[in-house]
Image (tube, rainbow, N blue to C red):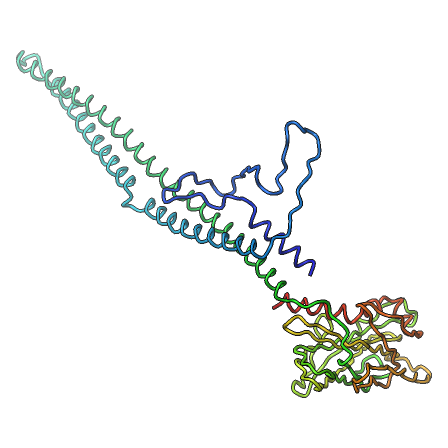
Amino acid sequence: MKIRRILATAAAVAVTTPAVVLSATPAFADTQPAGQAQTDPTRTGQAQTDPTQAGQAQAKPTQAKPTLKELEKAAAEAQKAYDDAVAAEKIAYKVLEEALSETAPLTVAAKAAQKAADDAATAKNTADKAVTEARAELDKLTEEATEEQRTAAEKTLTEAEAAAKTAATAKTTADAEAKKAAGLAEDARVEANKTYNAVKAAVKEALDAKTAADAALARAREEENQGGGECVAEPGLTTTVTGFPSSVTAGTKTTFSVRVANGTDKEMEEVLTYAGIHGADKGGTKDTGAYLKLKWSTEASPKWKDADNDLYFDAVGALEPGAQADIKLRLDVDAKAPAGQGLTLITGGYFNEDGACGFAPEDVVYEFDIKAAADKPAPRPTPTPSASTPAAGSGVTPQGSGSSVPVTTTGGTLAATGSSDATTQIALAGGAAVLLGAGAMFAVRRRKAGADA
């Protein structure tokens, strides 16, 4: 529960912190490129410097946990910011398309200016050719040419040179105009692309903020709706184990059964069975639990299945008042398992949609010997199971062919229990540390189930 509160608070702070997500009108004024750092002294968490307190540590205000109303407001604002960013992206894309098109005004103007420059170049070439021809005509005149002929040829050359000079000036001007127009068109395309990329980045930021705000709100609502208190002991919920072995051999599989009964007058909507399995070598210093695997099956689902990662069997489902359910369990011992001792804890619990949560107040620990595949140890007496006394009125008594040490939980911790050599050695190997109080286990499971919903 605590970690969920922390996550919800962190996400809410992230999405409610002042930040510029998008600053773009249809004209895209003041658009800032993506990735450019921004400095905002009002931003939560940014270091503040007081000129009058230079070098002195500044106290940071504690961020209060946001209320559900504040989270709803943050989520709504994040949604609006995202919608606005998406709308701006569409506009920016349209502007980019227009800027890249052949019909864009600046592109059309650039093409016209370039055509004028080309025409000016053609005119200059023509004028230069006229000068060349006029000079050639003048040079062809012989001494026999009249004064009138020479004067006319010189006049033609002078006029051609003047026209060529004018054409050259016109070409220079046209080239400059064409270059300027082409630059304006290219700048428009670059700016449109730059703006579109900035708006795309803003859309991503807005989507991230919206996702965080939605997640924070969902977690807060789930936490509020979960209700209920801590899991409590439910004397009417009992588990009975039958056929548990006193010893197993490496490379074998042993089947036993568990019956879960609802001896109360209320329905249990989701009933779970927990079966922890642990092992240690003969010296009690090495954990051998990895060689021990539990599988389960029911009449409705006869195929053997592995326990989940938390060693829970979800096969029971709901139990009406007075109802019971049977689960078959199978202990698989790896062929490489070394000789030693084993320990298992069988218990049950439930939780309802309204937040109610309970656990069987009496858990049964079963001890068993583990024989190596090649070992042929001398026979040893089979310990007599110690009786486990269920709560009054439950009508169910734990039983089994192995040694049984009842464990009673109080307030989510293990109460003092009996101990044997096997229990001591497995404790040394660290396996018994996982045999937590049932109340703690099912409280965790209840919250885990809620978080996964």
